[in-house]
Length: 469
Image 1 (cartoon, one colour):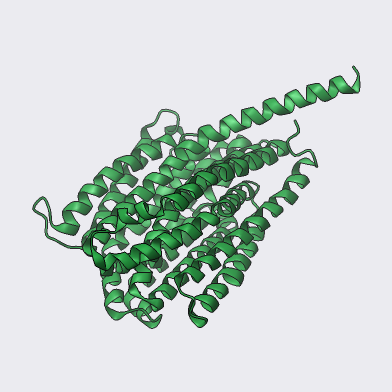
Image 2 (cartoon, rainbow, N blue to C red):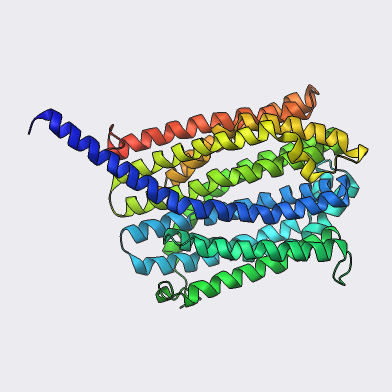
């Protein structure tokens, strides 16, 4: 057989493998993306109804949400280690280790929740010391104390959803979350505004609704895992009290750097919210609207990133390093492709989007809407870089590379984004637009550095011909 024929055969084989991986990636990513979007729909419901209460309530609820997310995202980041660990166990057919990992994931969640809840409980004192308006800080604390009971069930939901995603069964989580959206809408409408015979609790009502809905979702997902014919064999709650220190430590070893990445990211956005609060209430409210919008668009690359972790992890567990590299590149290509759509939406439809959160007919909202539109236009510019960095992080987690991305995150978020935001937004007094441009620069730097890191890892795993058979 001549060299040209061999080249043609290899090219056909490579194309078939790429198509096969692309199909598997999309099949897994689509329900994960919709699950994340459904989660955001629940949060968006809260934000919209807070906006109906007025700019002050929206500002307080947004500030509280950022504060809560700072601790929640750290805990979720640590628990994100469950996905690559379980995926590699499945790829290597170490089925007994799956239950041990999930069980320890529950206990790591408990360990993380206790100190986080204790700090969130004292939100008013902390926010006041950070220079926030006393009335906004007090309203934020009332909301946070009402919703704090959702912290641990939310972490447990993540552990179960990662277990299901590693088995390519994410649709169960999607169904539960979609049902949760409906429950959350009804609970918010009843408790925030005092409908259906319930008292009008405003922000406190939003917190109570979150606790009730999150708890119901956890028990529904747990019930599915325990009764499903293919999953009940794991007996996830069997010997639940038995410690398994090697798995416990493995989750922390791999997860703590991911948690630090989440802290760096949410910390930058929390700090930007604090900076906006110093600039003015209208600027903070506009920031809340823009953040909520990009949080929605962020769910698409996040779902793809989760699929990348599973696909890369299972390939690594099976010992197929070239397949792992191929899965990572396909995930990044898919994420960047979808980012063009979100960028176009934010750029061309900024005013209608802002009007969805704030009533344009009310004169007091005009300044906030105008600022929100300008923030959304800037956000459109960094969609591609953000999609690339999120997908790259997911792929790197699949090969259990988390320390390098942690360093890159600290440099990008805290070494670039936050200093620029403070310098141009506050010290030089260029306003909220300067803060958002600083965020765009940080995310773009992150995207370039993380893609470069995966490039090096892919070459190490599979050689120069990353897409080869």
